[in-house]
Image 1 (cartoon, one colour):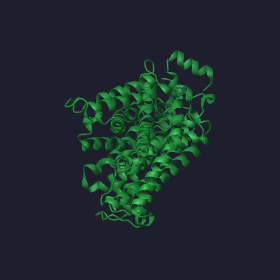
Image 2: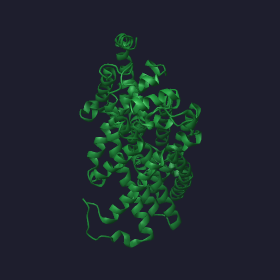
Image 3: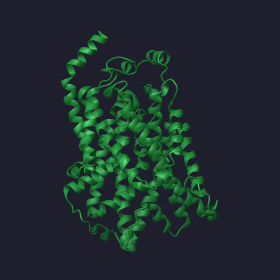
Image 4: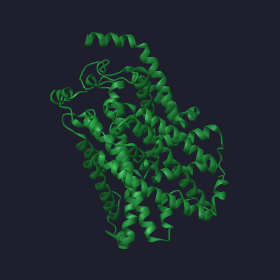
Length: 485
């Protein structure tokens, strides 16, 4: 898209600059930026807790290691290929969706990822980070925990409310700092992650009496070590990434070259997950060998350290990893999506700020009181995002052959208008694939499908979309010929 076309779109359609393709001269992210951007999304409190669940299923330490590495390899591959369009054309996720779902049809999958999932996760991640803030402040000021006495704000005590507000405000600052600030922040954080979580792994290995006992460890689970259990664990890791995978183009649009995002994401994900595998397995198994019970919460690990400096450094790093994950996976996609829904009224910053405010209003600490309903809801959202990924990949690589018409993408009517602004093939593929992936949650007979729902949803949508688009190709070509001449 040349300069004259950009100016025409901004003038005629009043499209925000945030939604237009990133100019080549403004793309500054190198491989190092991509190697560090996802570290916070790997090393956070819920991720460590989930590994404990793998041992409960009866997997050995070696099997858990390979679960993590297989998931990492698949994750890196999918992030790279779904980020191809962003690197090539400089467009955000909210605009890329329109090529497969239609100019108007992109609203629903965009809302699922960029708004509903982001609101929920932003609030929950902010609450998780605020608990670390409370611990950190109390180390310097023990009386902090007694502030307010019996005061409660919809169930939250005063120290918790203050910590939540502080951490919430830090997240908001990144909205106004922009994506380049995030890239610089991630590079600094990466060094702290290796120091802190590497130190935790060493501490746990010493507790266990060396690496041998950890490698020989096998929990007494009831599920056994079947291939389905193994793939179910791989799916569990990938499901937590379903949202970032869909909107990865929000970040790859900043890449200097396609090579930068390919090298950066492949090395960053795999190397980071190697550290995560060593640290999580060592901490969980080492603590069970030493104390008779596994420690799944890394904040509980920190409380057992003897050094005040180590405690402070660890808590600060955990806060920063939570912050990085929140900004990367929630603020940016929500900001871009709201800007795409209301291009004449909102830009990325106002969209991100609305997300932060709504995340506060939903009072995530109240949602945490009933964890079952929360994760059931988020599980359903994740189950629907797998099919969205399948549709996006099939459309871009198979149907479009990686060729997009940017000017028409930003037009109100054209080849991406489909029928009344919606692409029926995309919606049918998404709904059918999502139904197949999630039915096992409600019908026990289909539980094996639900256990590997990410794979089922993604591959089913991928194949079904191609078939449906081939069947409607003549109608589409006829429409394009009539409208465009």
